[in-house]
Image (cartoon, rainbow, N blue to C red; front, top):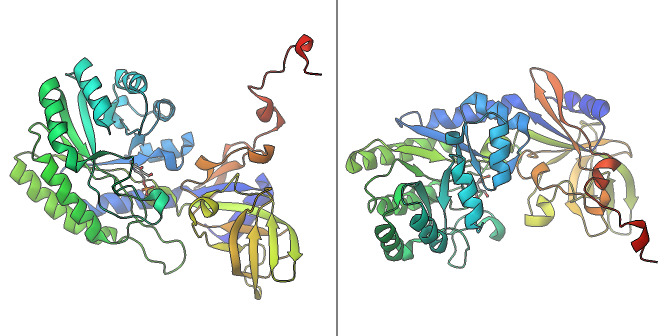
Amino acid sequence: MQAKDLVQLADQFGSPLYVYDAAKIQSQYNRLTKAFSKVEKLRINYAMKALSNVAILELLRECGSCLDAVSIQEVQLGLHAGYAPDQIFFTPNGVSLEEIEEVSALGVQINIDNLSILEQFGTKYPNVPVCIRINPHVMAGGNANISVGHIDSKFGISVHQLPHLLRIVENTKMHIVGIHMHTGSDILDIEVFLYAAEILFDTAKNFKNLEFLDFGSGFKVPYKKDDIETDIDELGKKLSKRFNAFCAEYGKDLTLIFEPGKFLVSEAGYFLAKVNVIKQTTSTVFAGIDSGFNHLIRPMFYGSQHHIENISHPGGKERFYSVVGYICETDTFANNRRISEINEGDILCFRNAGAYCFSMSSNYNSRYKPAEVLWLNGQGHLIRARETFEDLLKNQIPLPVETATV
Ligand SMILES: Cc1ncc(COP(=O)(O)O)c(C=O)c1O
């Protein structure tokens, strides 16, 4: 996509606006499957929490992707987008037994990440195939909030609890078909994946009827030009070889699964916001935009650095700006960034706005959620309308007149 296309879309659909480039999503999907082409059975479960617009789910379904869902509502969205139940995995954390039962009854593969639910589910449904999420306790990931391997992490069943896990499986006679792990997000070093994979293989040896091994995700994507990223081709080469050797040892061609979110959609996304005001203080020049952490929370939530360009005046002289939102708390997107000179009314473009951006947005400050557009074959398609005042009132119930509080 080019800057002029984005400016035109902001003009046509207004701001703030999320735009997703379909071709980029498709090429990332193909890049990943190509890197693992030496594996006999490969399955990609798109981690739909990253971006769950139905048009995006449909696009990825057409690419050949399956889904990773973390709530019954995500499962329902996946079914709505045309995925068959057996194309969806359910990898929740800390949800109730009832929700797991409900999802399982739909024919979706469930993944259990704690011993309590494992024992209860196995006792009630010994014949339902179950996947187990282990925690290999590999410290990795870009930020404490997205690092899931530490000893205090709430995710997965600790590998140190393997004896108890095996006891539950033996006692309930439940049917374990897969082992899963997810080491964290933004993992650069492929040795980390390979090391964690060894722990997965060691665990897998204890189960005789496996059908798949799920290596989760966590690939680091570039956030600006020449930024570092996980070397997918190298990982593909090394992990495929090791995986194939494990399958030979195990005596069966297992399916290798990944469940990427960011890798598939992060770079495809652009967030466009208009500059409302340029405010010069004694120390800083602020560019205040018509959005805030209600629409893009990642910089405030876990310090993510989204590259920002002034697409209204791309080639201008660069000045230092702090880009801030209109929310009534500190709401900083960037501090002292060099950006092409900004005038009020210019459109700023935030890169890497495909993953965990719209899907984490809220109505805080009673603002409307932005519209979403899919750029497909050189055309912008509105895939979610901007909210309206009716959306803010939807589900609110006025008190009956006679119970008026004053
Ligand atoms: C269990 C699980 N799988 C997959 C993902 C997707 O990770 P990423 O977006 O880094 O690819 C996450 C992210 O939170 C996750 O928790």
